[in-house]
Length: 577
Image 1 (spheres, rainbow, N blue to C red):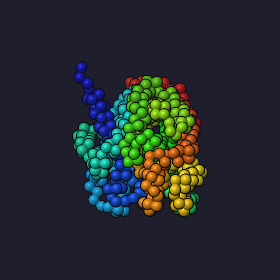
Image 2: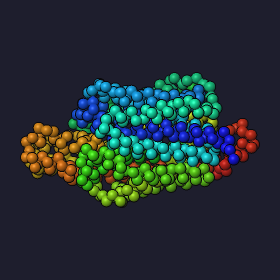
Image 3: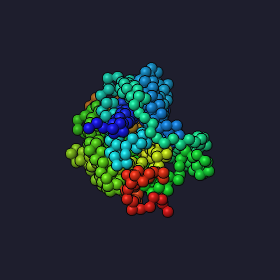
Image 4: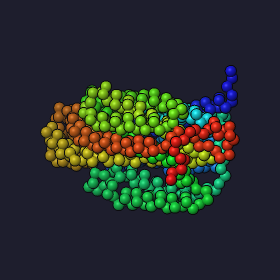
């Protein structure tokens, strides 16, 4: 029996949006692994103190732009058409992928070009993400939204893994390919989106909230920029949290967001619908989602540093080959999500989001507690099992939670609501990276300088050189390991190595010296980071538990037949008292 046009369209919409999601997440993670090749290609050393900012912004700029623009573009989609904004986003993202792939500059100029083009990619990505969940929600009936959103979330996680492996494969061949690889898919997806997607949203004509947009963007940018620069050394401090500029940015950003909240309660057509927070399922889902993002945003960075800086070299891998193998050894972190995401979304359609989202976060918290108990030089089967269960827990949480948020929204507010949810997610991920690195650096700062000094002196390095190296900010060691550079060769430099015998230099720059040296200090920092993540997940589980029972928003003007189809028995009231 032939399917109706509506039944066909929901799969057309989902497949196109899944392609867009996959493409954007591949591009976000592919840069993590390709950074060494990119910086070699533009003749710039990212570990030189004056160049570290370039590296951070190539990594973080995309996420900062996403966080800032999601609410605005979701609201614009509600006003002028979600599909129009999504289609334009596909085209913008593809255009800036082309511009990245033809980079011809060298040195700092090339780094600035890459950052600017990545920001442009972020604008296109924000157009896609701000409207994708709302388009799926419009296309799917209420009893299948969890399945649709679950499949789309799987594409996001799969894209993050595929990007790691693709970056490791393509970057050694030619670093431009890292950006060029997404162009054919972007062109195809753009044409397909313009030809096939239908705008089924309910338009809400309104004036643009210029003051709200300006204060929100400025406030969030200041906070996220402050977090980014807080990771860099300041004066004699290992990090920049005491820098007057960083403190001014963060405090000024918070003040602007307070002004933004005041504006949103007074304008006729606010960009940020604060009244949506009166909906219990929406509020609890967003709090849980933000806390979950806070726990996992920095996880991949910590795992990459753990594998590339310590575990892989100790098991015979050269530092130059560790980026690719780190991606391969993290496959279980993806597999669990691929298995749990669609299944939990489908089950949540029947039984509600609360049991799966809450149980998933509790499983994630348990996995973090067990991970921090592992020795730094772990046995891989145990490590693989723990990161697999971590991803299963996140898979159980994300799709039901997202479906619960979207089902709670009026059809006229799905774009704004999805943008608000995505903003909490993206902002929490940037904050998570700052917190994870801060906790790690605090752990390293306590013992790494003395450990490094005595280890180098014992291997023939002069006292003056060992003192200089041991007083370098620990972030240098972390970034060297993260980029797949040989940490000791990078920190000591050719001049210091020249004064050593061949055997001494070979041992110090070999695969075992640095991992053995850093294992104990790194383990202390890792325990702090994982303890923090576990506690945050537990609070997220509490928020998820408070969301109430299964709930689908019913439009006030729905016919009795529509109401009986959409409304689901609700054990708790809609509005928070």
